[in-house]
Amino acid sequence: MIQCKDCEFFEEGPAGEKIFKCDPFANIKEPECISKWQLMRLDLLLSSYRMMMSSQQRMGPVQDKIMKYVERELKDLDDADSWKADDNDDDFGPIM
Image 1 (tube, one colour):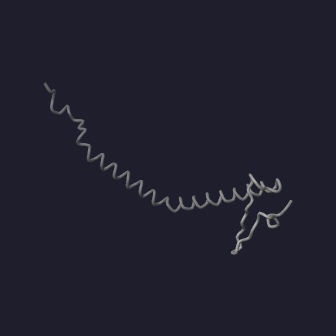
Image 2: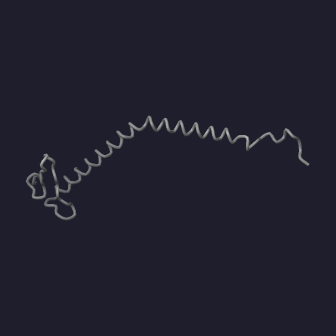
Image 3: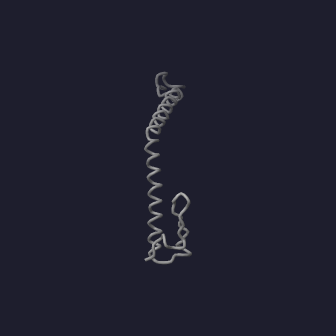
């Protein structure tokens, strides 16, 4: 099995970052390359998910405050419109 660092589709950037130019649909050299490529993509997906979860955890308290504010505003609107739907029509007797 060839190592990625020995492959012609691998480069190392000036800051030491690893650049993979292999494409699993066009230029894979060995079957193991597909497994490595899947692991790299899975790692990328996992890191993206972790970033999303950390941002959601930071936004959680703010979202709770916003939801409480919206619920309070909706309740105030319902209370303000309560005079429109008066349920006490029987107090005045039958209308003829």
